[in-house]
Length: 339
Image (cartoon, rainbow, N blue to C red; front, side, top):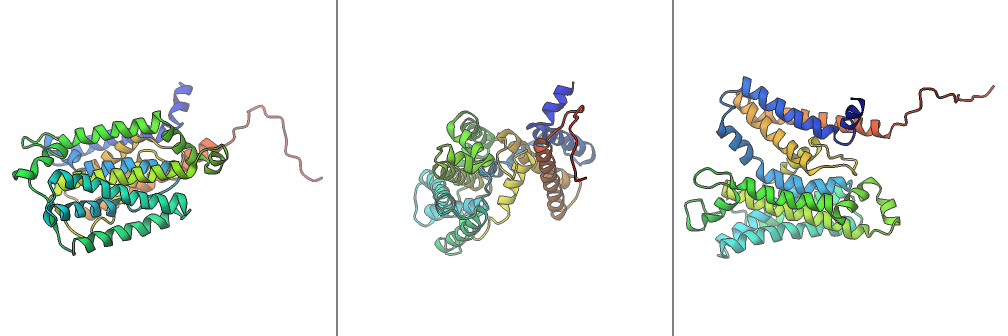
């Protein structure tokens, strides 16, 4: 029994707690919320999690390295906006436009990689700059004009059935998210990229001295984050159709919060994609549950902040416990002082 408790208090403690919190939240809102325990509510939770899920998957890699990516929200919106310009103004086929969205997100990831891995800029400053750049570039190229994607009932609206929801209400976006979650999971847990991602986050200098090309692997991590932001842009376009210039600020915080709540340490070296997805669904459940209780958006924001703070405090506690040195009970050594 003591071994079981010790394992729970180890690396999987916060992930275990996050999963428990998700179950408890769902039961709580099912009891006290209005019409929460329904199929429609489950679908709403899934629908509101798709693009945040993609962003959270990408930023989990970054946070494990000990970095941060504040640009993913505006990069996603800028990429989606540019895809809308390609469709409405340049009259590209919708399939090519969707590929263009992903390419744009990946290119912004390349800029982050160059600034952080090559030029050694602090991730907070570099990604903050790219956040503002992407927001400005999108508005400039779109001429501050709202872009519109085809609806489900139009000829080019087929992509909504693939990336979001069919006419019958089937959440096809869940399959799309699951496929790229599995890809990311394999990359993080079964490949050299994943091993070096954890190693860089644990001790970057030691990893470099051991012969690992830190610049290369850190660059790949930020490019991957941009790629997943582009995928999130496709899902966002499928879900909302209308893309407004100058938006995207704050979305990145939801993705980062999902990763932190799921057990990814802001100190680096520790993280789990499964935990990240649990964190994303916790926030989606919290948002939908508070609405079912009649609380307005400001309360949703407040309680999300409380959950994030608690998750960070828990991470700090877990790190202290992991780094603490336990002396044996029968220790006979005594501290010697001056006579």
